[in-house]
Every structure is written in C-alpha cells, then in structure tokens.
Length: 308
Image (cartoon, rainbow, N blue to C red; front, top):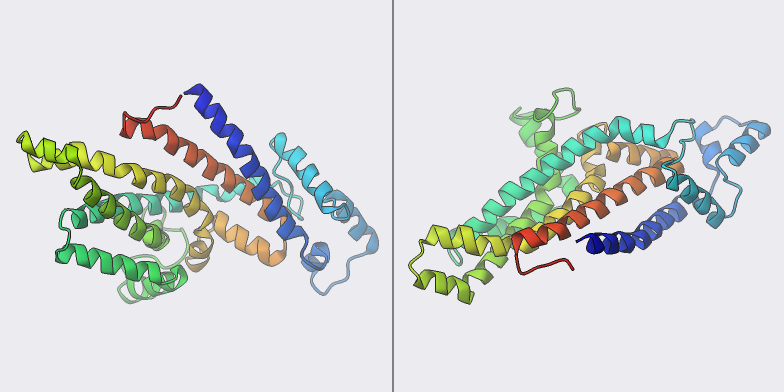
C-alpha cells in the first residue's frame, strides 16, 4: 500500500507542474500591463510602476516568473495579490463557502444520483427507466447557467422556497438551491452510470448463482450486485469532488456566494494573475487528493483489487 501511494504521488507531480505552468502562462501572457489596469484611467507614477513590476517579477521572462513562483510554492507560499495580501489568506477566507457548496452538491449527486440509477436499473425498459433516461438527457443538454437562472427565478423568486442570493442564511438553507444547480450535471451522469452498471451486473453469473441458491432479491441486489456496480460510480464521484470545487465559478457568481469561484471570477476581470494561479494550484491539489482517495477505496469495494 505504501509503495502504491508513493507511486501515485510521483505521478501527481507532472500533473501539478503542467497545470500550474499552463494557467500561469495563460494569465501572464495577456497583453497590457496588469498594474496599470488596476489603476484604471488614472496614471501610475513610473517609479511606483517599476517597483511593483520588480516586486511581482513582471519584467522577467515567463519561465523565470514560473520558476520563482514554484520556488515559493515549495515553501507553502501561494504568492501575493497585487494589493499585497497573501493568496493563502484569500483562500482561507473564502474556502469554507466553496467547501460547503461543493460538499452539498456532492451529497446531492451521491444520494439522488445513485438512488435514481438503482430505481431505473431495477426497472429496465419500464416507464421509470425511460423517465430517468429522458430527464437526465435533458439536464445534460441544458447549460448550467440556464439551469441556475431558471431555478433562481422559479424556486427562489416565484415560489420563495429558497434564498436567491448570498450566504446570510447559513448552511444548509443558503446552499441547497445553488448546490442542486451545481450538482445537476454530475447527478445526471451518476444516475446513468449507476443504472448502466447495475443492469450489466444483474446479468452476471454470480447473480444467477445467488438467485439459484434461493437468496432474497433484496439481498442479491444490496449485498452483491450493488457493491460491484458502485466501483465506476465511486471513481466518477471522487473525480467529481475536485471538479465541483473548480466548477463553482458560475454557480457562485449566479447566487452571489462569496467563495473561491467568485474570487477567481473577480480576479480574472481585474487581471489579478497571482490570485488566479494560487487558487488554481490549491484546486489542483484537491483534485489530486480526491483521486488518490478513490484509488484507495477500490480495495474496500472489491476485494479482488489489491494495491501492490
């Protein structure tokens, strides 16, 4: 097990380097001066401009800028914003909102997605199966920002069931509607994946053997079929946990939640390169950690899988 974890961590290093270098390059090769952009139409004194350029290494070649950022990252320094604030402090201030939103969406995907998939899989070819397939296809086809605005208008404004903006109502009330919107795309995939995997396993030889031994249908489905069917679902959900953190930009903007996604959106508009790169690095680390935990769970779900 230890060798497996070490090997996966080594594999994660090039992923982290490639991702951070790509984001760093896209942010800092944009035309124009980001320092002057922060000042708007007001002129910046040349001495101040030169000092800020030197402080943030803006005059260095792109590769040199990245290597300096990487050197700071190895010591736990995610950089500084153009206002002098530590990016790690910005992340710490807003991380709880994004974490609550991501976990709420992930719970929606896990509970509702698996339940709908099992419901459809056990009724293959019947009206319930067709209803789940048609509904999930519709959800996948509609962009998340349209789902968000419609949910906000109908469920929040017209019916008044949920808050429509901000996090003042706290968890879980303020996060239910944005969490459901954020989870809608992944929930549809989880339902379809669970349904497909369950239908395939129900045709397996071990299920026919269990039925021949006289085991109850509930015992066959819950203790045997469902456990094997959840292996690809767990893989998707593990990856999805990291994706939900990164994909919260649009949802947090629509519902005005002061989280990491909203900060990234504002930083892109202001061309706050250090903030964008630092937050992206943190999200990549979350994504890598989630994938490692999924691999470790394989052995618990299927004893045939071993980490050597």
